[in-house]
Amino acid sequence: MHSNHISGPESAQAPSPDEVLDKLRDLSSSNHLQQDTAAMHIRAMALIGRLKSLYRAANTATRFKKEETAAARQEMDQSHLNLQNLLYEKRHLEREIEKCRQFASIYQDIPLYNLEEFKRLAPEELRTDEVISEEHQLMLNRLNFELAERQRLDLKKKELIQQKEELLKQSKSKSSTSDMVKSQIDLLMKTASEVQKKVEEIVVQAIPSQTINNIPR
Image (cartoon, rainbow, N blue to C red; front, side, top):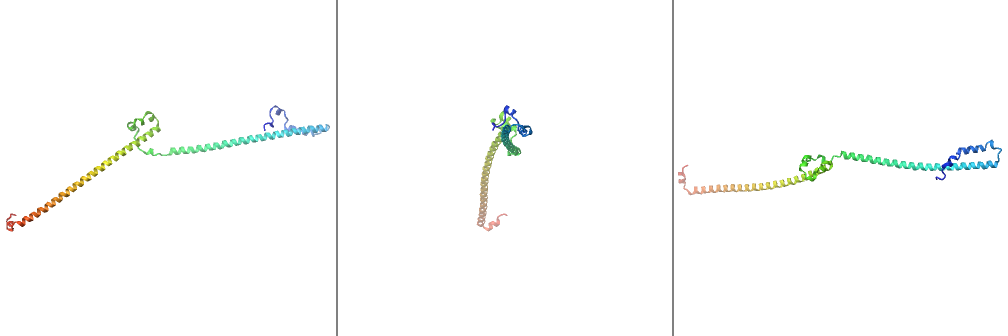
């Protein structure tokens, strides 16, 4: 493709198509009517051949430029497509970042030990200087400590509830025993009262009525 393209020193000396056409027009003018016809014909054929060569070179150069232009356009289209893809990804990432910024995590509503309490109560490995200086790791350690503390307190609560239930059970048992003793005492007192009444009836029946009448009232 490049072999037919006009280049180098020869292209600087080669006549343009317009110059070749001017020479052909000059041959057909009255200035050359007296010259040899055969010589004129040879010269005209040479000029026509030269003109065809120039047109072929021009066509080759045009085709080459068209191919270069098409390749450049394709590359530009691909670059434009890549740019659009990058812009789409950029907008997508910006939306995701904004969502993350607006996301309200549950940990924000959890009451935690304040920092001073954490430094005082948490294990040493959770509150090193390196951890304290790194905000994200510090928050993770505070949450982990809070979880451990709540689990410990929940276990203690369950133990106290169990102790309370045992005490209530013992209290109910003692109350039931007390009620049973009281019932037995009431029953004994009632029985004793009935026995006393019967004894009095027997005694009254055994004593003569005259004696009873003489009993001071």
